Image (cartoon, rainbow, N blue to C red; front, side):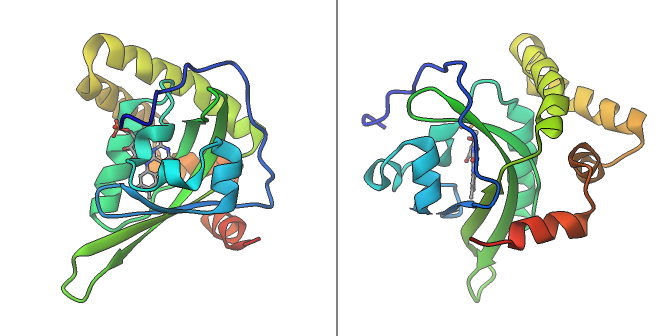
Length: 186
Ligand SMILES: Cc1cc2nc3c(=O)[nH]c(=O)nc-3n(C[C@H](O)[C@H](O)[C@H](O)COP(=O)(O)O)c2cc1C
């Protein structure tokens, strides 16, 4: 990790082209093995800087830990998860994405790779998730991730929705529409 000096976040958003997909492939533990050109264009790292590094090189401190716990719980089960993620670029700028995952297995059923595709979320979804993430991060700073997990579960229960349904609600799309958005390869 010597090559990476974690950038100081700055208040500058990198706009995404919503016709393009940010793609990466990792091994079963999240070590980057492939990133497409648009990934590199947006985060500002060169291929040699990313390959072999853990995917948390672009982790933004405004992201709650509980979101990544949910993400990894799903990935270990070979399931997809749509998460709104704020990522940290090399120059400290940030960019928001909505994620889509696919897990590949070998013949013995062992996970060999995770493929992720990310696209631009609508502005209203970003605005809706910011205060929720802020609360989760604040809880984590003072009481830890178990407490933020409880908060999130209570929040969803009060709304009477699952995590997945909530994300679709925030995006204001159906699962079919979201699948279509991700299939729109460039
Ligand atoms: C295929 C794949 C893609 C990922 N994409 C991102 C991403 O875009 N941004 C991010 O912060 N974490 C991403 N992660 C999760 C990271 O591996 C990591 O869990 C996260 O950055 C939180 O860091 P931490 O686990 O060290 O706390 C991805 C993981 C996998 C397997």
